[in-house]
Image (cartoon, rainbow, N blue to C red; front, side):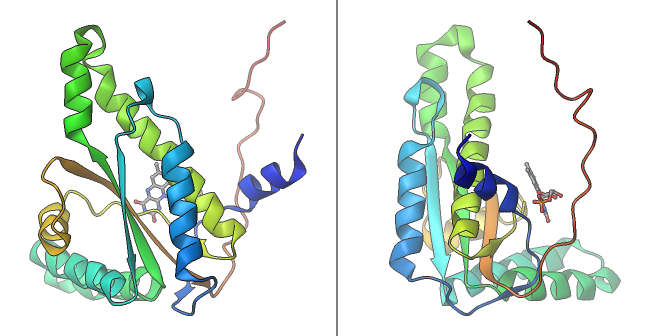
Length: 200
Ligand SMILES: Cc1cc2nc3c(=O)[nH]c(=O)nc-3n(C[C@H](O)[C@H](O)[C@H](O)COP(=O)(O)O)c2cc1C
């Protein structure tokens, strides 16, 4: 077994205490995102993933617009806690990665291969999950801390308008990242017996 591969997988965690000091150069962030987008597999090699990387002020803009959208739907007495979480765990970081799937690619596959029609949106989400994991782990390897958030669909329209996103791109997840300011708590694991079966 390749030790560094498994070490990277084990080390990837969810970080909610983030600072905005740079851990690596911006070019390095762009490079790891490009590598992951290029090499992570997709059904029928459809390559439906789209990614937007937001740094600095653009990253802060994402979390400001998220708060503005949430303010419309979160009860007034609960909003202070929401705002505190967003400011302390997400906006406080260095950047955010937005994961999209290009639904025009998915729909073209559905038309071309009607037998798999219902599967293509599922496979598209699965491939996006693989991409998220690859980038999350690569960020951790470089010393960043990240988490995975899902404010979609609440923020979809505001995000599309803010960055001129193609109408066919469906927002799947948001990944704020930054300098880790605190280590995550130890994680509990369920017994593997019962979760993994081997027959021979
Ligand atoms: C598909 C998926 C969706 C998740 N959605 C969220 C989310 O919306 N907000 C959040 O804070 N964490 C989210 N998480 C993070 C999980 O809560 C976290 O990965 C899990 O508790 C294990 O902790 P670890 O990441 O530190 O290993 C998500 C994780 C996965 C894999």
